[in-house]
Image 1 (cartoon, chains in turn green, cyan):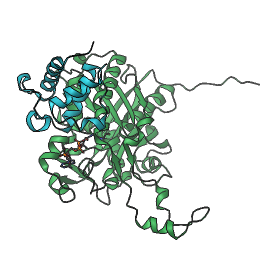
Image 2 (image 1 turned 180 degrees about the vertical axis):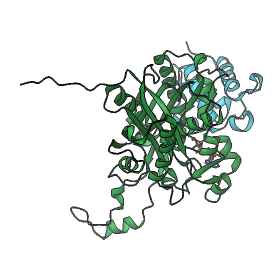
Image 3 (image 1 turned 90 degrees about the vertical axis):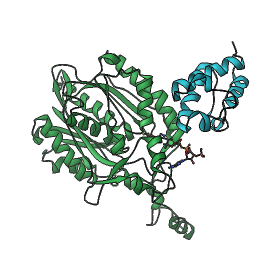
Image 4 (image 1 turned 30 degrees about the vertical axis):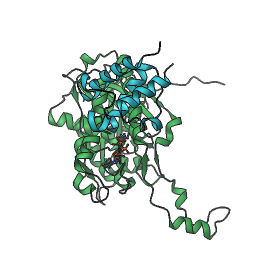
Length: 348
Length: 82
Ligand SMILES: CC(C)(COP(=O)(O)OP(=O)(O)OC[C@H]1O[C@@H](n2cnc3c(N)ncnc32)[C@H](O)[C@@H]1OP(=O)(O)O)[C@@H](O)C(=O)NCCC(=O)NCCS
């Protein structure tokens, strides 16, 4: 017989309660990049706005950076780790596909036994994670959700590739999402464009590096080919991605504002994915954001940290006083997939 | 209705002015985008997309690198608009 099933009970709305970040201690200036590629500080600054980035050392693992960022976010939220009901980690640079790094992080922060899993959504990972978190809180599967964006992109950077060697950085950013009486995370405008998947990608899959016998057998030729393989790296068609980011993503950002019922004039803060200052400048122009809107320009000293870039930028704006708790912020992430996610939030 | 070369030049001048801040009167057919008008490879992407909207043409990435001067762009648009 069909029994009556008791539904879970969620909160009326969700909000970001706290944010935290971790930047690796080693700062890498453009001069150091010039050791690897034929370029100049001037070219890198004018095309990307990047002056320095952080690269993680051996101890600054994906898990270790996440634990630091998570600890700060939990303290900022004013809750205890045991109150975390789910941990969602977005990363493309954790080199173990299994188990999910989220489980290790959950354990290390002392969260007890929360649900914990990783997601892969490239530079839109924070927005994807935030959207999941909002759903979990409102639906009632978790009262508090820890969302982490973390990358060690230096591990996936080909230092001899002029188009990317200067772009990427490492770091972790985290937020705690919890219950709210008022709406504080707007509708998410998100999606994917798989027809453009080739424009940003990892050069080779891990299976290309297989040295143990392959089912079906491998001969000397396969072994020889293996010797010539380079470690995988992220490559991209820079101009195609630039074109898409500048024109398509401005529309997505506008849609997120419209769906949230917030006008450019009502906005306090704009936190786009920190990919390239030129993309940020262009979006600000297209969206006609007034001077009064504070724009995150963290890319200058952080480079592109993919899923970590938005929470890292958010934390810095709040820490420096450029933004304040209660401000209305538009966040938009976009990248490999191609995927994107934009929403309007109340800052913690 | 298709634009004349004169109209295209005027339209391009407005676009370059908007994107690179170059005075409209400096945008002439013989000027090179990168060498004379301070339009680098990324600004060029913005110019191209603005031109696509203004003149209802498609300018694929592989054709963009052949558009060295304002005249090249005007001619391309003249030929491909419909
Ligand atoms: C990466 C990026 C800065 C490269 O700029 P670009 O203008 O597309 O670069 P191109 O490869 O077309 O090269 C343009 C010129 O600069 C030169 N160049 C390329 N890389 C260079 C470098 N690292 N240093 C100096 N010169 C360089 C090229 O040789 C070329 O010169 P030429 O015109 O004399 O032939 C840019 O495409 C970009 O940022 N795109 C968006 C990528 C992004 O943000 N991705 C992540 C989204 S999540």
